[in-house]
Each structure stands twice: as C-alpha cells, then as structure tokens.
Image 1 (cartoon, one colour):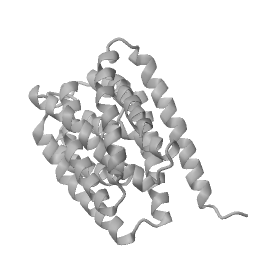
Image 2 (cartoon, helix red, strand yellow; image 1 turned 45 degrees about the horizontal axis):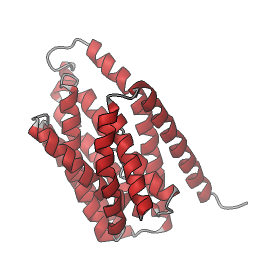
Image 3 (cartoon, rainbow, N blue to C red; image 1 turned 30 degrees about the horizontal axis):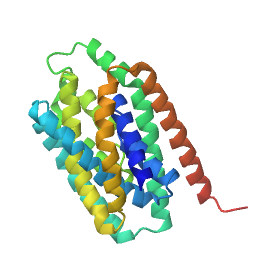
Image 4 (spheres, one colour; image 1 turned 90 degrees about the horizontal axis):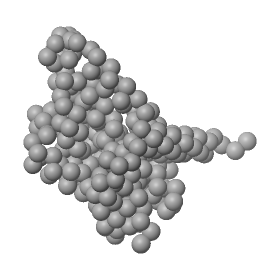
Length: 270
C-alpha cells in the first residue's frame, strides 16, 4: 500500500509543478503499473480527483477567482451527461468491449491532453493578440457562447465519466477559447470548481458500479495532497518550459502505446 502513496506523491508533485491534470497521469499509472482494470482505474481516480480538486476549489473560492455563473453553465451540461453515462454503464454492464471502449476513450483523452499542454501557451498568446472588443470574441460567437459552454460541458461529462480525463487541461482550453478576456487565474479557478461536482457525481456513479477501490483511494490521497503542496512550491523554481514538454511527450507515448495495444487486442489472431 505504500506504493500507492508514493504514486500519489509523484503525481501530486507533477500536477503541482506543471498543472497537468492528475487523471491523465494517475489513471494510466493504475492500469500499467498496478494492473487495474480500466473501469477500476477510472472509478478510483474520479473520487481521487474530487478530493484533490475540492481543496483547490476552496482556495480559489477564498480568493474569489471562480466564475460561478460559468461553472453553472458547464455543470448544467456535464452533470446530466455524467449521470446518463453511468446509467448506460449500468445497463450494458462492464463487458470486455466496454472495458476496451473506456481504454480507447482514455487514450484519446490522454493524447489530446498532451497536445493541448504543448500548444496551450501559443493559444493564449494568439488570443492575446486578437482585438475583438471587450469580450474577445466575434459578435456571432458571443451570441451563442452560453449554449456552446453547455454543450462543451456535455462532452466533458461523457469523456470524464468514461476515462476520468478531461476535466483539467481540456476544460481549461475550452474556457480559454470561449472566455479569452478572463484572467488566467479565474479560468483555472472556474475549471477546478466545475471539476469537483463532475468528478464527484461520476465517481459516486462508478462506486455504485463497484469499480472503486476505496482503500487504494485513501492511500493515493495520503500521498498526493502533500505532493501537490510540494509541487506548487517547486513550480516557481523549476523550468516550466522544460517540464511541460517532458510531461507532454510522456503522455503522448503512454497514450499512443495503450491505444495501439487496445486496438491490436480487438483484432482476432490470424
């Protein structure tokens, strides 16, 4: 069990230093290193994320860096989507093909996270160069921004429930594109605040499926909370420009190799 706390510590430090979502690191770690089934890894990581992000939401709430109206828009799409996805999993059961679907979804989400982590600064720089008025958006897009936010929440709800990945980097990127004039700290705080109810609802749903290992969850949190604190302190001293590409390349390798293995396993032997 000490190994789980050490894994939580390492992931916590990586999250604190780079800001990369813990799910994209912890879920494949549980599958590849500890031999968890994809559903068990996803279910355990969802409640792990709810616990770690809950503390972050409390801090951002105290600093008034959460846009609660945007959180409400995203949650109005993501929470019903998460509940419906859980009902669907209950209906179809956790057959091998469902485990494969969760693995493929996880791999795609990890690869997308890695790519967006690499280009995130370019996106922010490009948005900063645009001059489209107070909102930072063309009038036509501004008129449908709220519905798009809800639809984005729906996509995140399904993705996070199936893979536990997406509430971090993917959610932040969505907010950066739709709300380019918001301060970066408010974007981060809003994304974290939205991730808490989403991962909690999806995590409780997986708990009802029996895919959550509660003892392992406790040991992961025991290591990750001090790891996040340590990583946050180290983040200002370590070269972020070097660490983010390293983490991104690592995620690309993990995601691509898991995707290849999962697809190949679906091909009947010749």
